[in-house]
Length: 211
Image (cartoon, rainbow, N blue to C red; front, side):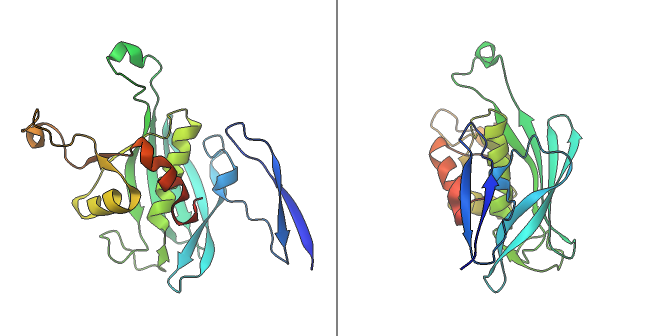
């Protein structure tokens, strides 16, 4: 049996380690082992998803900086068709103690998330179908939040048709839940404003095998 080894580099001050790959498999540079925020524009790595036959495959991820603190990530298949897209805004606060917050409000805001390969969404583009695209895009957002020292905090405003997925699969909750003290919240806050609770960050990071 042929044994190959490749060296990968971990972020967040974890030590370098070697991964042994058995057989004829080659090392695939996934986003798990790179700092995607520090990566230059263009192709930055791959994500592992499943095709409609439920077989694992790898798709390319490309990065584009829109403006400082705002980034776009595209997921493309081998035919260069875009099957997923996310736009992130890094909102880092350095003087939050002056803003009357009890904890650091820094977060990554998911401005747009599109799964073009899912026929059950209004964004479907009749391209090849893949599973886990939406999950991987949110894992990119979570990773960026940790890289940007935003503690893994995520926020977004969900479409009505997507809210149950964010809530029941991802584990997000309403940022402004109904309470006895705020009976008129629907007139004040958007009930589709969602956040990722601290207890669900690890769940999202590992969902469907993680990045």
